[in-house]
Amino acid sequence: MFSSSPPRVSIVIPTYNRSELLARQLGTLARQRFPHDDMEVVVADDGSSDATRQVVASFEPHLRLKYHFQEDLGFRAAAARNAGARLAAAPVLILLDAGTLVGPDYVGAHLAAHDGPERAGAAGPGRVVLGYTYGYSPWDPFDGLADALDRLAPEEAVRELAGEPGFQDMRHRDFARVGYDLSRFAAPWMYFWTVNMSLRAEDLRAAGGFDEDFRGWGGEDLEFGYRLTRAGLTPVVSRDAWAIEPPHERDLEANSASNRANAWLLWDKHPDPVMELYGAMYSRGRWDPPLEHEYGELLEWTRLARDLDVRDEIAAACARLPDAGGRAARVVVLGSGGALPPSPAARPIAWTPVDFDRDLLEQACAGTGRRGLHAIGVRTVLPDGAADLVVVSSRLAGLWDRWGEDILAEAHRIGRRVRVPHAETSPRSPHVPAPRPHAV
Image 1 (tube, rainbow, N blue to C red):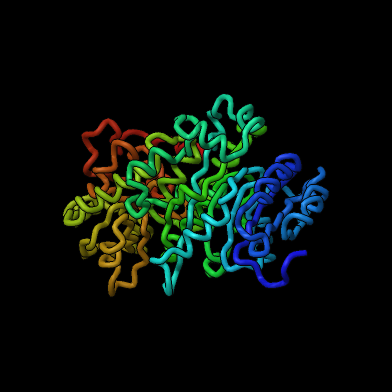
Image 2 (image 1 turned 90 degrees about the horizontal axis):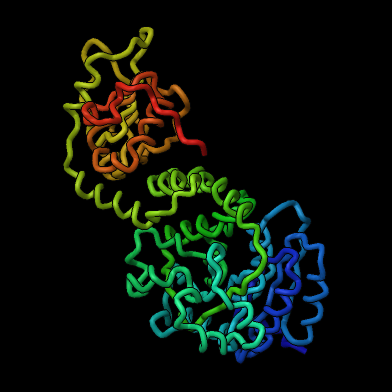
């Protein structure tokens, strides 16, 4: 019989029709050297039709267990995790994918990463602990892993295989490149995989939990991680809180399609430059170079272009304005910088400044009543035909080789006319027919 006092840590496992994998996983949790009275396992069932409920019941003598069942309305991992987190009674939550195997010191290692001496008495946002996950490589599984796990306990498999590159965490090379200091990443939230992570329950609640608008595979954990980093949580990697993702059947084609479909949903939730890049890349399966590289390039260009004043070229581009039927001409400037030129005396202009540098955008809008957009111009929230003229300034020149076609496509979507002074001698001149936007 387990204690009635609250546990110190809750492990939340969403699952769907993986009863055999779940049984093996619960077996590894039952082997924890951490006191079982101080831990609970919450299984959040996303509508399974197999023996999941019976498997959970079979472990009730060995683990403090809670079980939640939600109707099968499609892939709803975000909703399942939220339901599991609501049932959890502990101050620290471990989020673990169904079937993922752990070693005997796993729970204690996660808790230690939150209770370390440097956290003693700390107030404010806590940590997100990313547990190192061996074997997770859905598109390139490690050959022989299934056989190894059939004959070895998880800790024995790690001792035998840890040096094999194909067995290491998919993030291993990136983690090593920054010395496991995730503050050096431009977009650390890209590594927040719920296959194996933990955080304080109060931080999950303060962030609002997972966004249940995400259905299907992919995106909901990254969007959650993005909000956590914006809230000030510190991401750390724990090599001690390791797990192993065993090979199992996956519909990789369906998962890829779902991930692409969800890519622009992150931008819908957070329409800012990094999500423009994420949506443009992941909606089309463009993984290389990765977002970390692309966003790093944008941040570097933002620094280099900080003092680039484009008022003269904007004024020249607006010298011949399209007829607006007597009203003020609607002009959108992609790459406005910190100031816009005065409207011509003969033609009033209703400006919409757009820039990737938030500080300069605020300067361009200060005291004017204008509503600016913090964006690159790859994708904006503006409707079709929102502008009589779109001016694409040379503040976008440093991004042109990679994103010029996308920016032009967006400019032609939102504007009746498009002028790109800095690209008039480019092969992608605005004087050629507008390119067709990429399918999303």
